[in-house]
Image 1: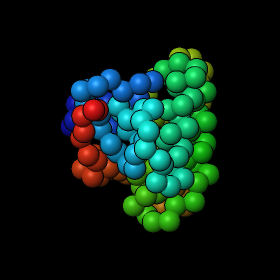
Image 2 (image 1 turned 90 degrees about the vertical axis):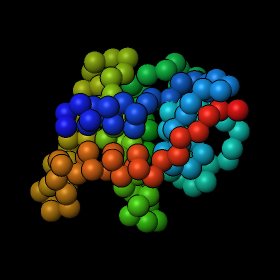
Image 3 (image 1 turned 120 degrees about the vertical axis):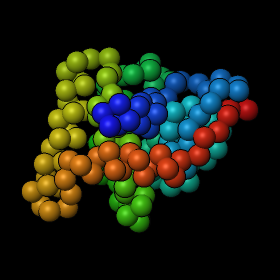
Length: 152
């Protein structure tokens, strides 16, 4: 089970590269911009969540792949966005949680990402809105709804 969760995390997060190579696989987690391999495409974002994914990709393109500052900014955006449906909120939270446990360029930044996630998990648990076990469940649900694609 640990291996399945770890593999799911790697696929789910799959931190995007600054440019998608022709013929390379990608995984569309949501909209036109969310997911590995969807960076710097020409499609318009479909909503504020997709736009936040786009801004994260642009941040990587401007500052370098795996920059903690880009990830933390994206996580803070995801925390602040209003979500029109529980399904969209669940997708955003799955991306948020996966990004939080993915290493970035600075150990202190990575610690900050994890602190954000664990604070939210603790708050959800204390308020009866969820438990730590919801994290892998969100990842599995998001992956089951994602669309594997190949970049043109």
